[in-house]
Length: 305
Image (tube, rainbow, N blue to C red; front, top):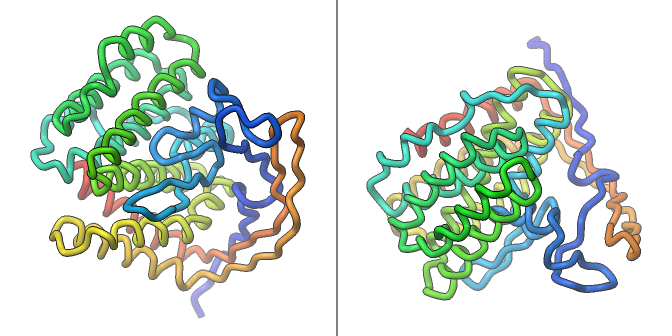
């Protein structure tokens, strides 16, 4: 009988995790509009929580912020690895709006990773690549000269740099929704999730760190949300192909055993924090882990090539 190594996942994002409430200026439960954590988490699909609600096509979906994965990777002691980034020169290779939007999300996750590791020179270069894609998607105003200047003048201030990039992505997202381009917004969100999950997969291979494995194993619900989000735009071959790939990945998660025990959360209004107490575990075999890693890398490589 083939030996299986079982990893019992504690669910970093769901078990005893401090989650920042979203909201602008709510004195009881929300963070203020200028709170760095609130805006940092909002880069591509976050909302202030590790799993944030976003509206696409008139529906609400819960998608984790790619920045949270980057924070986790650094927190576990993984070294900065430029090889996991999508080379910024690739931005010139994307000829369709479909690929431009997906890779705008990919580069957003890359920007977060670079900034968290204080790689300011490369952050500026990647911001320029993102700006080019945004211009091609008629979103150039979101990454204007004022943003570039503010970003440059705050080199070394990690929180401020992330806030500025977050602001640009929020502006782009608002523009897309105001102009009935939800399908592009959906691709930006999907690209960010794919890149962040790719980061986690590479780090899991290189470090075998349990928390990173936890992060990978805990993506089933998010993946389901992405599939439902893209379902609204089926009938287009590019969207169909991407959805099929994500559905294949979801089949791996379907084989994993999940358990959940609800425990009421504890709220600390004075510090604007909510402590999630519910217990969430996943039994992930080595075969499951390898299948997830292989599939997410395949999907990501098709997008960025």
